[in-house]
Length: 160
Image (cartoon, rainbow, N blue to C red; front, side, top):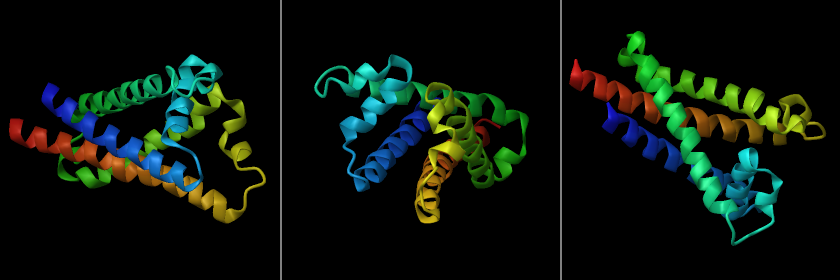
């Protein structure tokens, strides 16, 4: 099981952060700024102040700690639901959707109240909202949820 967690953690974590870099880069945001944003969640806005300082490494560490929790929860809970073994793609999509809801409707607004989803999109066009929500759902469902569920189902089949 430890090997499963590590593999799912590294794959989903890497895909997710690369996706964040690509989508943010399309908006003119650098990978360093992405990581500083991630670090500013638990460590405060001072993470933005030092481009070469602790912000980016702490952001990467924070990202992978959060991802480890996401993987561990799935690997721990999934064996209780046989459908996750029979339909890992569907299970992964649903888990990714759940992760998106938790991150965008609970975690981020707790730290940044102005990022409560309805308020976060105030003034944006329908196209901008669709783009932002779509890329977040793509990342959480396709790049995080499916790999976690697929790898977990594969491990469960081998150990059954």
